[in-house]
Length: 554
Image (cartoon, rainbow, N blue to C red; front, side, top):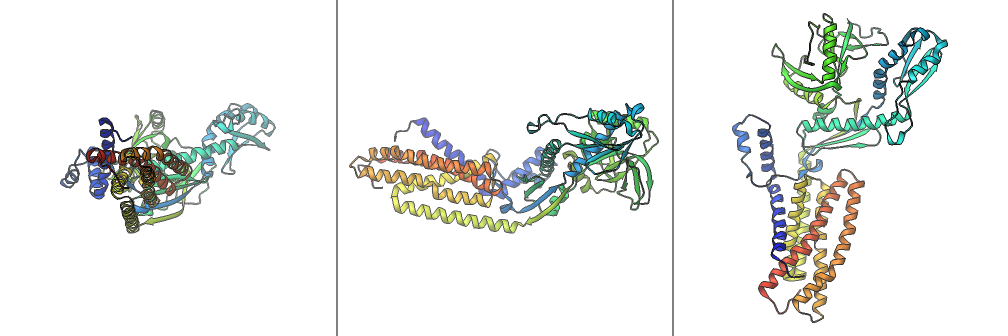
């Protein structure tokens, strides 16, 4: 086992050198981080200012530049726990369902008479017919609109339930559809929040679901929780409505098919709008910060082909009438349609600053949050606290590292020196792999590295103790070393596989900091076995070939 072919030697040392190179950018963390940001900005087409060019030359381009991402507890940042109001989605579904229900009942007008939408709970649609004796025909017509629920756990169920009370047809979502809607809403909320945070250029955010209706958001490196809330705290729901009228009375009575919304830029002014929008932000494909004809900050938008066709037909058929652009339940603009607007593009004007248009365009591009979000918990973690954590973790690593190095040298002499060199390579390999996969290092992750440092010498201790036993049997040095590695191999593999299984379970079942600990522990086990079985043995083999000692002392 002490004989290594040339290709094996090259492969082992090559892996060590590659790991050290991948880990090296972390020694100049701030410098390499500025280099990465500048390089990304130049690649995106930013103006080549002297400062940006200087930062882009702070690190050699031929060397790896991937860094270990620092978690919230190390870098500082913002923490939010948000609650998603799922009941609002049910209300929106009822509003979307109303045109289909209305058209289905109109086809039966000669039997059921006239129809009118009535008020009711937010998760129900109430429609009154003028001929109560024909309520069964009305229920049957609406029930025909039901569709199967697309879900593995809800096979055989339909999406709506239709009942009647007197002259009212009552439509509601089935329990199976509510469960499916809740799941889709939470997945959509997570994705939209992630896209908004990613568009802002933040690194390695933690965005995950907690319970049935809550979302945990942790973003390292952001200034404050308020800044994070400004980015993701609004739904940025864009809709276009027909204007019925305008009033100064905030308590004005409106019909059930209408809504009363305030004007964003005109205090005391309210618009009466058709409740069902002509088009929605779901048909939006792009939004960019721009300037209008008066050189005022605005947001330009572009609709998909379906939205563009509807927008074009509506403007062609309603020339001379006002058209409200509604953002988050306030009318930002209500221009009069002067001519047909083909192509599905337009501009949103208002009293926006340049910063507001940039933020609004990010929110619109990412899409509208499907429901209102409220914040149950918010914390801002300052960089000073993060630096304290880094310093404490660094001290813990150095103390553990020094203690292990001294112990191995005093216990095993020259062989302990070989183990110490392998341990240094082992730590470099851990950071190299963390940088390669873009993992996030948290305070528990540092604990995992400290634990790995202590565990890393276990394999070497097993081997060296076994070599001592073989030397007592009057075997030669080479044979004793071979038998030591051969007979300790199974114990090394067994011990590390069980720990690796525990790390995998922690990663799969855990979340947040627990996963950070599991990642560093798992990678540390893999690199420890590699350095103990191959790197240390290769160093001993090369020493034996050069010195050819008659006796050895472990």
